[in-house]
Image 1 (tube, rainbow, N blue to C red):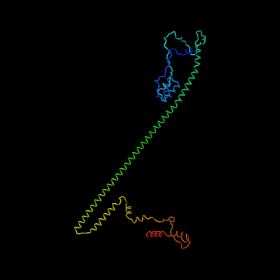
Image 2: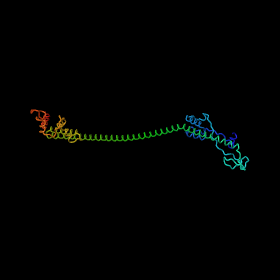
Image 3: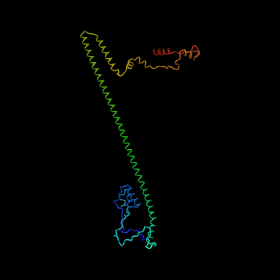
Length: 336
């Protein structure tokens, strides 16, 4: 076995063991990046899990805190250079791999002990390689399951951030729409208030002009009255009472014209001026006229409700009143 191991080793000096350097550890990287870096450097599965867990817990330098060190897969180096024709070179044999060389005589050579050891070593290494590969696949699956929680949490966090961003954008859009509607409503209110103030100002100015005209007419009437008094006093007296009554009538007519609203029509003014007709119109109608027998003549009603076929069986029974008699009775009651 020792000879087989020595024979399987490559020629030349043995490559030095390489340790994982601290400068290549980046705890700020994600779990997948850190795992891929350590996998490329040949870090075992259990140490990768411990390092990732320590990085999640916030350990500043988990390799130094946990005392971890591991080797990496040595790089394949070329064999040392030997000059051509060196005596130490093995003789070249034009044979294929796995086919024993034949001697010059043509007879098969006996199996050597070195070839047998190599075959046994290869036969033992094949199941070991299968087991090692299966174990590596299992460890990779375990690591993927270990990192699945982190990936799911990262995806959920990204989804929540996207939903929150969409909600904020929708809220900002709705707020902008509400602000726009509020601005439009305020503009409409300001416009309505401006129109109202303008109409009120115009109405006050119109009332002021009317008052000025009334004052001017009143002053003019006073001047005319004084002039008439002076003229009649100079003429030797006259009918001052007629002037006073005429002035009073003019003032009363002016007052009625001032108090009467200008937007009323003819019928409204007539209704307001005629108090007797207004009192007649405001009185409620007492009683109710039935329309059940509309179209019947008095003779039909007499035949139906008279003494012969009516409600009362005697000739001296009550008789229904005609429409003219009912209206006359109603007028008579109102006149009382």
